[in-house]
Image 1 (cartoon, one colour):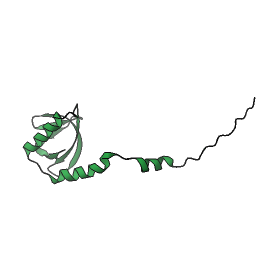
Image 2 (cartoon, one colour):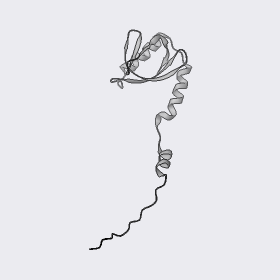
Image 3 (cartoon, helix red, strand yellow):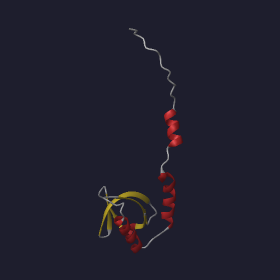
Image 4 (tube, one colour):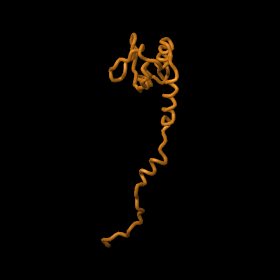
Length: 108
């Protein structure tokens, strides 16, 4: 029996992975995120509208245990949080923080 097998042709692979990732990666929220933040910052809602939006988030069929929301504070700061519930005058986040509803100017 022969000890040497025939050689197989193999193409050189150089930086194909990074090229493929740059050319073919697409995420739907890449384009939306900057537009959503811009739209949220334009609107300032009163307390009853904010509570209605929060209730709509918790009553939606997509809400099982947590909701990913974008919160704009009255001081202009935007944050993304995972909200799990509402109690009295604040929202509870997944990591145990309290976000007071009176400090919120808009939520999406």
